[in-house]
Image (cartoon, rainbow, N blue to C red; front, side, top):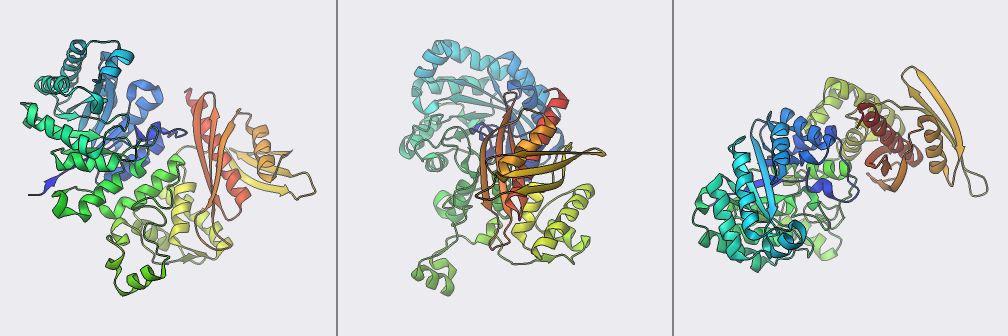
Length: 506
């Protein structure tokens, strides 16, 4: 009999803890809406107590996103649990997720608590969370290094207190599939009231075993698996949503488990998360990597041409990869533009469509033909979700191997245009220095990356910048057929985000 596995996505919480990732509230909302379209059962929107910004982001997601349970993380204290409830109280289906460590090493060195104190605190926290919501998840952090007998008593007690889901994380990625499967089997056998709660697993990828451990847990009775898009997260990341979902889909008779995921949204979700977090997907990444459905070997190519199933166990179209070569051009109108966006699954306002159409026309004049990949890059990178204080009016630069690179930048701020010029190590550096003179925000760039989003001499260059200002991290993105212009757009994107946060007083 096939069981339905609950997909709990933690991209917005654990995923955002990836080094260098910083999402603002609107970006979190955009990803959350896409996760709901994807069919994720539970979206862990964040950890509200950690900052006012995270609280507001969780609250925004709770108000705006329907069709998925919205969860907020909380430690086992009143302030955390109360903040979690305040953030998710508007959700269609709210969940409080509270946790405390249960391994000897964590209890002794991190908590400074005895096992009896941990058990008492956990029960108290679940009861407090249950006073707000009927859906409470409890996690015993570092479960894979916990003593089984203590963990059984702890889980029994929190279920008795009202926990509806119990999560046993492999917090440091220490377990092997055999061990993890045995741990779940042990819980099923030794926790008397386990039938009153869903068993969940949250596996980290420190040894590259997060997906294997999660699947082993499902085989032994886990009913929920906690994942992140593209496997992002702390250190080496979390179990990959797309890999687990497609493993269950591809091997139904082996796992006898399924999900409610809308497979055709997988690839677009992956692209969106990669773009907004600034974390590129490695080419050989399973399911969503650029090379996942590529065949270079002559033998493989011959087999695929005769029958795709010879070397492909999944149809790329199933997960939303379409190589349809449908193009739009400079003569295409708004109707065709809007229709194509709808086909690609974008749900934009009229204002966003109008803004995107104007930029599409500018790009079409440069390239002639706009492919699906061009359009996805344009919409993902150019349609901003926060007010734009600074807009690029013009850019001039002069560079060469025997001259000092110089750039002149004109930015519009409201009705006014401000111009500055500067020199630098190259045209990009010179342009950034000119922008700094205009904005005077104190932005410090930490990381710069450039990649081509499409093929050919007229390919779009996609620039991602990671920067810091006043102790806060920002990610900026820009696209253009001119890599200097793409770089400038990305830096202006960062500047707009910094200005937006400064004006909000956060």
